[in-house]
Length: 165
Image 1: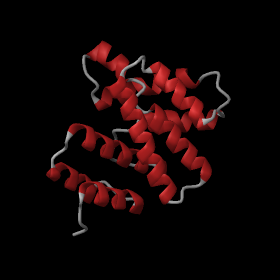
Image 2: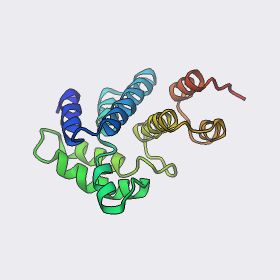
Image 3: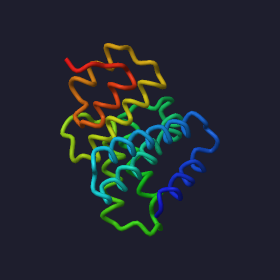
C-alpha cells in the first residue's frame, strides 16, 4: 500500500477530527524527516512512516470507551484496530505485524526495539510537545534520557533551541 493511500484512509478514518488529522500528519512529517536524515533502509523507512500515520488509530475508540486517550489504552486497543484496518490490503504479513508492534508500543519508552520504534517515539514526543506546550524541563528530560538518534537530537535542538550539555 502506498503511503499516500494510507494517509488518505487514516484521514477518512478520523471522520473530520481536525486535531487527530493534524497530529497524525505532524508525527508522520517528523518521523519521515528523522528517518530520512538518519539514513534508514527503505523498508524500515516505509514501516516507520506507515506506523506514524496510523499510530493513534485507537484514539476515537478510547475516547468513546474510556473517556480519554491514555497511552496504554491506545497501545492495547491500537494493536487490534490496526490489524483490522490493514486487513485486505496488499501489505505483506510481516510488514503488517511490524506496524502492529509499533502502534502497540508507540508510548513505550523502555525496551525500544529497532530504529523505527525509536524514531516513532521521538517524532510523537516532538509533535506532542508542540501541540501541548510541554515545559522546557519536560522537553529537556526527554532530550537527555530518551532521544537517541542524531537526526532527532538535531531536530529537537533546532525546534526547542536546545543545547547539548
